Amino acid sequence: MHFHFTWLEDFLSLAASGNFSRAAEDRHSSQPAFSRRIRALEEWLGAALVDRSSQPARLTEVGVWFEGVAADLVARTARLPGEARQLAEAGAATLRIASTHALSFTFLPRWLRSLESVLELGPVALTSDVLARCEAQMQEGKVHFVLAHAHERMHGSLESESYLAADIGSDQLVPVAQPDAQGQPVHRLEKTAAGEPVPLLAYSEESGMGRIVRLVLGRQLEDVPHQAVFTAHLASVLRSMALDGRGVAWLPRTLVEEDLQVGRLVPAAPPDWSVDLAIRLYRQREAIGRAAEAFWRAATRSGALGPQEASAFISRYRSDLPSKPMPGSSGSVT
Image 1 (tube, rainbow, N blue to C red):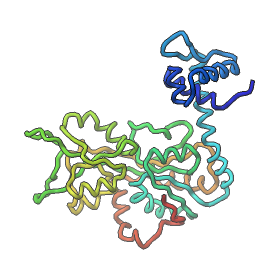
Image 2 (tube, rainbow, N blue to C red; image 1 turned 135 degrees about the horizontal axis):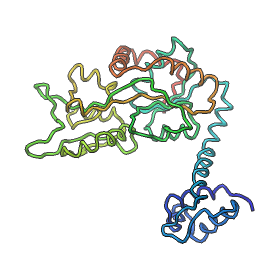
Image 3 (cartoon, one colour; image 1 turned 90 degrees about the vertical axis):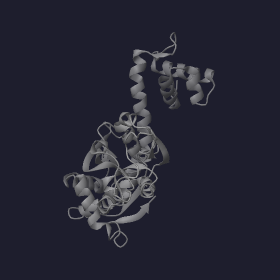
Image 4 (cartoon, rainbow, N blue to C red; image 1 turned 90 degrees about the horizontal axis):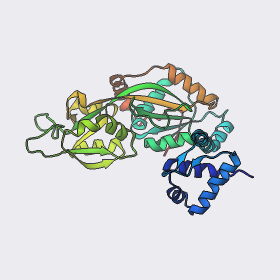
């Protein structure tokens, strides 16, 4: 009997749902055809994978073991095209980096410039996107590195044995709002006598910083009446709305340090509402080519910047952003 790769995806769908009808629907198949494929997989392996006598269907001991094997094979296959490209480009100098929006506009350009003292940077192809799509690009082998904010309570898809990670800086999510004439926040995270909800400027579901806010502050927010009046995945968009007085937004200190210093924005809550973050660089554990390996060594030896250092680091160079291009950049920001 010949093996068909789609059987693995069929089995993983069944393992996730425990229901043949639902799994068949997810796989856009009729239930009889789907059941035949699961039977064929079991015959090919020579062992039962599913206990059909229970509802929902439960995996046998072999099935539990094979679920991990199948997931690894499917993930490994998804990475093959990207790994093949990386192998072909092993001697090339172009670094492919995916960065979340906030860091690509603030931290990353100046951090790259700081590395020039220890490394001669070649061309850089930068993709700026939300965390979920940056993670997907790494999983598909389309980039050498992902740069993103991280928190110890958020375990993303790159927090696994398949990838290496290094903290190269730190940041802080700060709840901010527009000030009134006395310099006090127009909107404040507190219970009001009238019980009116605090207007929040929220991150979308696919935003990495949105994940962190929900994980770390979700229960704390339950004690304060609030309403999401605006949602976006870009911190820069939420910053614009906060500057316009539309509500409270949790924004990276590296993005709003200058706003806080000159009073365009002010903290909207006590310090215990702020969230400390790491700025983390990810790569595949496997070989990624000579240029990328050299970049990784330089990046991880350069030391991490704290939130105040990172903000000062960015502010020091912000005035020359229009005039100085990113070192070695190919200008590919998509």
